[in-house]
Image (cartoon, rainbow, N blue to C red; front, top):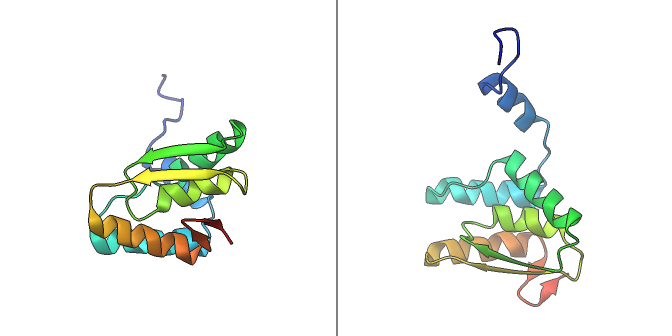
Length: 113
């Protein structure tokens, strides 16, 4: 890399992150993560997860580390309406927060509304 070549510094990363629009359900899940002190995926990583799920035409995805549901919501956004997300987390408070996040997006254990 030469001195005239821009790097992926903080300004470029902040700009890229600001270009991604998260829906209300993801924003609520992100707020829950902040309340619990959990670290959710960034908006850019979430958008990448949705892109990968969509590109792979994912029908079933297993996620280890549910957190408050931010990454799960992004994955579901990229999956078909009949896709199945199985997500696990050892923290009970994460389970409760993720359930609330999924319910806020009209997603139940039985499927999407």
